[in-house]
Length: 122
Image (cartoon, rainbow, N blue to C red; front, side, top):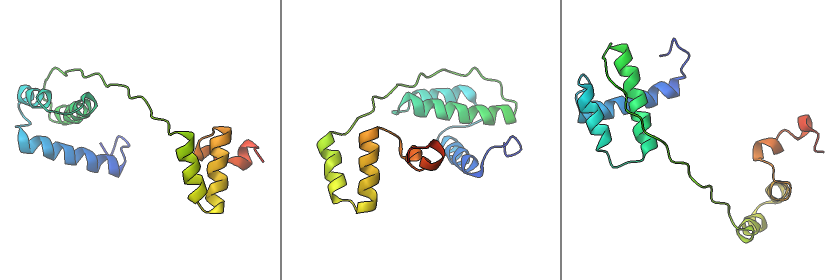
């Protein structure tokens, strides 16, 4: 996978999850792997990640298997109340209070605030 351009941090995470699967089920039996993942008490997103990772393993070792599909649930982003934001701003140092106030008032992302010279805000 490193030859395919995967980063080292990705490879570390994949190997950790493969070891987790290997501790709990025989990786050479795809039906057992699917059964183990299906019976996990976790989100469908986590199960989908495990299926992706096992898919890499199965491709490498030429193991034939029918990949199950798990649909990820979309989460609603919780937006903090303005009074909570104001509390944070009032306790921040001046440098950060200005940045937080700008983000709050204009509605930009923090990464956009850092690019003010290229975007032309100031």
